[in-house]
Image (cartoon, rainbow, N blue to C red):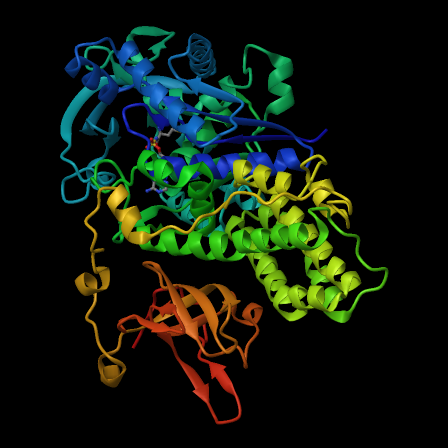
Length: 636
Ligand code: MSP
């Protein structure tokens, strides 16, 4: 059986879990669950990072021991993951005795092999980040990472010979294109490695910090928290303790991280492994950040969105769906409650939920709740939708394998929309009136197969809702990719039940109130952009936008709904292009957008900008850019 080992970063125990941590963990969970559905043997690791100055300080403030403090706060992460149905196989804590033992063994090995040496350090130190900086690293005399003041220190410390492995790392990254992903992050790391690499200070004198792993070769020191933390990925699977286990799981297939911790994972970690003679992980994948009003969401910025409140408003599955659907893995995404509400109402209430209730209602009304068999030969509309249905599992798998989770969800959703259109075209209620039971049965059978495939393929994202969906349509097989790939997923004769509304519509005003937000949403565009009308086009701001997704607007034949990344955020655009373009022809295109138009409602859909196109009276051609400039580039 193929093994699959996936990790999240271990989170600082001091933080309260926010949407950023929640995102990485849900992403890892979704990928882990897909791999389990594909029949692989999966190990999914998460945990908490518990040593260091900040933890010691917080414990002192609370007048409890650091260990008590960690026990209390680590539990908050566990509680959150339980609420969100995170199916981790192991939760590691860096204060676990067996982890500490592994860190000490690793340090001793490095010391014995001569890769650790003692020297005097003179330079700048950022106390909250626990990091050393040279004079030239500083930005305006402050910490280049967090912008806080630094202090000058001179002390004896232990150093790890990172510089010795710099060329090896460059060659390794160049030879292994999958090692750091996405590609632009690999280039960023290679760019960083053009400058000479300093040796890494891996100790902290106990007189300054005691809450850490003691160096095995000098008890006056503890280990730098990142060296301790990174080793969790190996200690969790038995390094130096259980060879068989380690052999089974290592190397990790994916280290999922946020872009904020790329250097530690893509430079320190591989060099540590190399020096220890341990195989490299297969892929380090850095995703982007959730932003609020164009700023990174985080505790220190005071703009962290509380996953507890969102979970109690939405339940776990809809929160999971939103996080997976609205971030293109690798890029930043902007969080807004209105975006969340419209995404969930559109995809889940209008499309999937609507289809489920239509089909279950009709099977109940016309066939006493027993799924009818299809006709032997079918009409061309049914053939068309059958093709969409049968291609869906492979499409989704391909997207997941390429980390395009949002596309996988879009694939399922667009199949559901196509099936809703198929139902409109076939008008089963008319077929029922006419007594055309053969075609009526075919329509209901066919649509039910799609619901079953969607239920399986969306299961890793929404395990509870999908179980209810699959139960409602009488599915009794094993939830697996193999089952989803079969032609018939639910047999004729299965008992169909009318489920309770699985995805009730969310009311934005009520949602705002339940989250304790003021009822009038902040007018973001008023704050950041000048609002103009079309007549004032003169003053328009033009930017390059990348089309992330495109789809036909339900119930509005001429319109396409586009989701466009304009660098700082994603926008929904409504364009009268359906006559000239198929949605897939626009996906991925870099187009030109007027970004500061007052949002307008077109046939009930909000358009947050306009795209430019040429029109010669016969055809319409969308303006694109000649070179591959990034989304958000200004058009002057
Ligand atoms: N303890 C270290 C990691 C050690 S791993 C050996 C750490 N912890 S953290 O609590 O700060 O978590 C950082 C991770 O949380 C990021 O890498 C990212 O995965 C996630 N996020 C934190 N804020 C985020 C956003 N605003 N958006 C998306 N994810 C971000 O660093």
